[in-house]
Length: 201
Image (tube, rainbow, N blue to C red):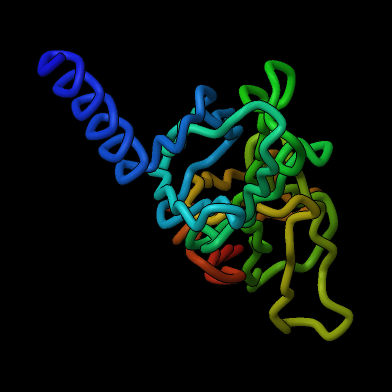
């Protein structure tokens, strides 16, 4: 009989420990994937039980530690957006009742903030100058006022922290001038960058 009481007491103790650790009788771990996260400081939260989960830059999957029961409500939200990027849940996969179809298929996607890339051209007096940044190109027309500087911006935006490398695809036509570049290689800052300098002489 004493052994029976000891086993019953041990069972109650184990149940209390599991509840205190957030087990709560749950058997399912809320988990999912994160696409294209290239920035730090993302934090997810299950608003139904208050558990938060920091996500590192480059991380592609996550698992909450507090288990949930089948049919238990969950709502995974973004408590803190990553620095220099914005993430969102896909297809409302972050909200629902836990099941084998929902608890393991939560999906988020992140987009790094994009900014414009450009600069100025001096000494240009004829058409034909074309600049390139990878596959992105921009044609520069001469200024309406001779000798004035011309500003330019590439059509495509560049993601914060991404490398850029601007080159001259074609030199201006019908002129003896040759154009050269400076400040044309670097890493995109957290804002528009207009520091590329093209000098034609």
